[in-house]
Amino acid sequence: MPGRSDSRANSFRWTGPGSIHILERGMLVMTRRRSPLGFRTADERFVSAAQICEVCREGDSVRVDLRDGEFFQFWTGNPAAAGTIVRLLPTTRTIEYEGAAGEPTPPSRPLLSLQRRRRARRRLLSVAILAGLVAVGVLLVTDIALRRAPAPVATPAVVATSPPVSTAVSAQPQARRDEVTSVLAEIRHFDERMDGLRAQYRTASLALQWGQMSRDDFTAGINKWFVPQWRALYRELAAKPHDDDSLTSLVRKRLIAATLGWERGLQDYADGLRTNEYDAVVAAFGRMSDGNESRRDAWRIVERAEFNLAPTSSTPRRP
Image (tube, rainbow, N blue to C red; front, side, top):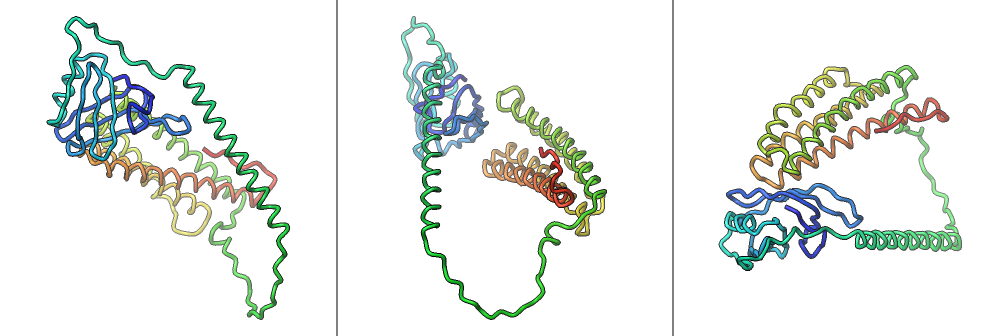
């Protein structure tokens, strides 16, 4: 259903086309959200029947008001389709306005014009420049104030002397060049496989959001295709030695955490979609984000190890 980018059309910053699935206990809205900086991200929201306060239809336009003050409006391009949606919605408080019998069907509402988009980009750019100037000014004032402040007088204190304890060894173990080379080859190998699985997931997710794939097919694909592949990758990593504090073990532990995050996150995502539990879907996205962070942590460990061997050499390319 074509929608508007105008914030007056909804309170969720939804923009562009989307799809609505009417269920027995509510409705599932899948569209894209525009952030305050202008970026568009996929958004999926389940609105239960208890949240719907009032539904108003005028021609091909349908406005849904929620009890917490939020609202959204969409256009179907066809008054008959809009009327069918209103009758299928799980609510009893509806208002409908029909047009004249011979009145032609109004065209779909256009999106924001190019001129309005350019004005919005100029405003965002102006705000960013102003914020940057303010930040620079604050840093300059702080630096001047610190330089003019008198230096504190250090008071000598008697302390017990003891040999220094180095914590860098436990955080970042010393490794030979051949071990660093071996770990770098291993992390690149698994990194390429993870990139392939994530690319397949993004393709399926976009197909679901734009209505090219049903929810049942999507959840079935997760359970039958994506989860088994992540589980196989986890078993392959877990079978390798990773019980000591060596560089190889540290990197493998981070990669194992990454595979577990994606495996459990995808499983929870499929369960949340099947049972229409919004909190479970949000928690699943958190697990997948934790998996991505563990993967980045593995690369940081390898970079520090290579830097300790040759500070002047180039660091490995991160994903």
